[in-house]
Image (cartoon, rainbow, N blue to C red; front, side):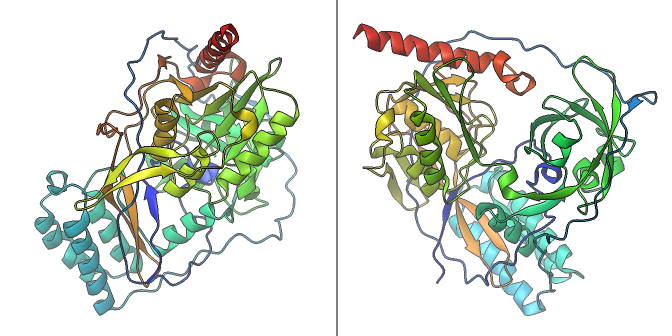
Length: 486
């Protein structure tokens, strides 16, 4: 049987996947043939309960405007010939035979009945769900209709965690996790906003940056269609309109802070996975404070990458403190989480993970710390989008006394998922384990409570003006002065 993998429920952030390369499959590699689903218990971790203190900060609001037909045009950039580098191919979806569809439906429905962490199925009549979706699965005329029926049935549970993935979706996720994902696009991360898509990050040297786009620019329209008119873009939304074959062009209506809207033509290119590294370590300008940004726990080599970058940071001289930013981190695999924690905390339990019939301690490995950080104060930044493994990371550092937490309460999304693979390459991730703190408290629906609450839409600010980052620096300096007094 295939070795099982346990993962923390990853929450889908409000990043446009097509631009970022995060959700809708544009490219993916073929997965190996999966075997019959298996499942067993998983260890878990736990953080402390902390009463938040409350200074709040109000950010400067984004300027309001809508796309203007009189916007000043930016001359189109020259369109290079399409790149010869291939995108990762999407797998063909063959139609499973009728007996295979029946067998898969039975397995998936039964797994939920027998293993789902909530025995009341969160109020869903699971027998009635079978009566609704079994005929749809059996009578599907196309592979996508079949997979959509299974997808919708699992979505009935409404836990924001459990999900069914078609072979294409599974292949895409595997490509991301292994660092092999690539797509045709412009190389930006975007947050959906009431007025459009707010650019939060650009791939260095990518097509968007080359075309003059900058963080905190607002995309108001794509190809003349208002960004917020999602129905006009069809099922793929604005992201599908931005992505496309390398070498082709897309016209965007963009507004920079304090400026009128303008038209920008961006030539799509091949965007590799490394265009948006999962971590980034840097010294904050004019200080001896390090900033470590961790965007995901969904990479097998994450701990090794963090160790290498932090060591380079320390080679530049001692640090007054380290800020670890997990505000945009939606989670990942528990093993990756634990080995990352081991860089900062030398072993120990961070709580428990329990299924219907098992309960296990979640333990940090010992002997893996970054020794030069042992006396360095740490602050972790959290937000409502800090979910799953990222919540457990923040909670564990807080619980151990290794770090203080600044920001806003995390998502409260810490159920653990178990992977069930099927012979056609599809996969079910099912919430089968509940994570609890050492005192038995669940973070589900509650989240990690910061030591210092700073209410701010942090992604609207330049880093130098980020209220939560400023508060984290204050916490570090306060901790450093306490250490200096002995």
